[in-house]
Length: 456
Image (cartoon, rainbow, N blue to C red; front, side, top):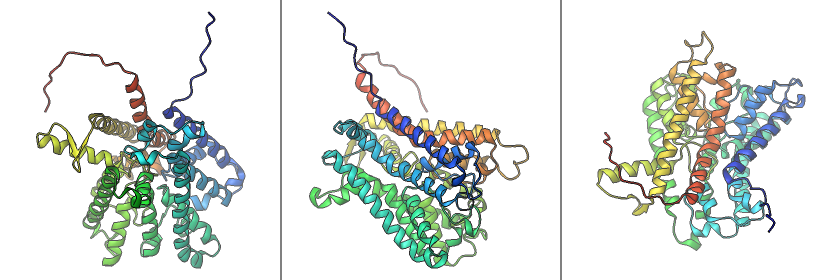
């Protein structure tokens, strides 16, 4: 009987994401290299274009050139498109690539992407995709309209493009800006006293960082009559982290004359709130990061490492991961056999994934930090120390985009490492979880003897 060869294997979801992002980054790199992309109308070095394209696609915000002063309008449009695909596409690719391939969205695939979905979220795969695109564009357009009320009177017609660009980057938690006319690499420090700009950007960052799963639950609340466990967990953790972060910045920088010290009480509250929101994954800064005390920078590192919610445009280990870690400790201290969150038992596989994700994330940051620190050019130790290198390493991994100065001074080797770290930070955690779940389905139940080991 003749043997019929099986059809070629299709790429796994994790590999599909990796290959897709690599193609997007490569295309962006080539487009940014063109003379039309720079204001000088000269070719931009391909390595710098690769760094910029990776940062934009991975919605990070670390830059080697000021976006306004170096890139032409065409180059800025390319960067905005990369950010849109990297932020919005990151969510939609996860939920839609099976539909695009002619398949129905599977429960396992969606659960891998979002971490916790209700059954109602799986109805009508194409409707999910359309909803993500529709509501994302609505949020971005609303943000652009609010920002244009400030930028158009101040910068004229170009202010309209600034408003749209920064609305996209804020919603996608990217941190790129066009405020270079106020000073290169100044981010939004020139708007530190403007509540319209800072509050609009902060709201866009928060909404983008909540994730589609939470939006869907709000949209369908009248139908479902309740919030899912995932939505409640994200809202509680997001609100708590914003409040704690705001209080931290107020206390840590209250007397610093280079940051909050010279501001009025209202401006201190506004900038502390904005810093708390943006430091968890967005990358804008209304007060100079390099002027913060090292104590504040260390606190910012923790906020960046935590990041936003699963299935969102933000990075980090995610707020739900932190919640599971905290409740694992609480459950153990209470001598409980299971981890409970809001009176719901969390399955052990989720707890294992949480621990694996956290440990691997810390290992990735540690490798980047050590390599970045020892690859810094000679003569920079007086400007950038260990804390600043750790700050930029965590910023790259968590796709935040804030910089304490290490990125600007890093040599080629250091920037290569940051490129890899940004890519791993954006793809790695999701890819890892999906791979673990897929592999676990193929493993056989093998009985092994019990073992005992001392800990603590």
